[in-house]
Image (cartoon, rainbow, N blue to C red; front, side, top):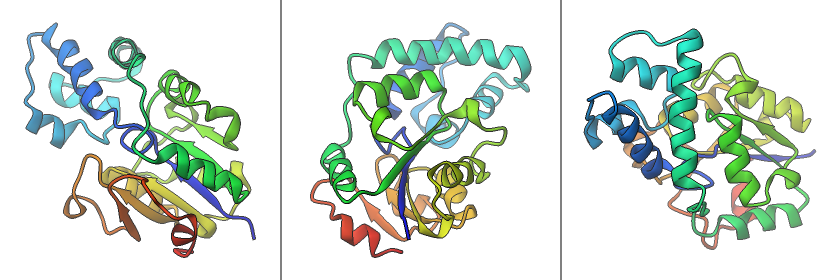
Length: 216
């Protein structure tokens, strides 16, 4: 029975949240808005851009306006982050060990494809993964399980045999809604701030593949 490991991206492969904060601060400052770090923690991390922009701009942002504002903010993020792409400690070694074991892998992010291409491209992950999904590939965002169910389909591995690495409330919820096992990556949130996961890590240093597969 084949098994698969699926990674969210922001806060799971790379600790990008501080750089998203910088990009959003610049974006909002242009509009004379100055959200606090506390507000970001509640209304930005792990949320999709439609929610974030609607919340902070105080009205429903949708359609073409959403696409335009999202492009502006994500372009700022990519400009800030492109020289900083750096995986969470131990990630590349852990990923290499998954590949040595012949496991299928995928990435399932709520971020735009251009961000995924920047990060996964810089880390040379794209050709080594069997499923690559970004926000453009789904109609419903996390906590809806669509991105994980689609990943399972792409990987040709039943949801019961997929393990997801997630760092946000909506992401963990999406993976659980898809019927998958979840490893909580405590990069942005504490255990208490996430739904109950099957296992928790702070980073990937010394993480044993068999320990993770034992969750199945």
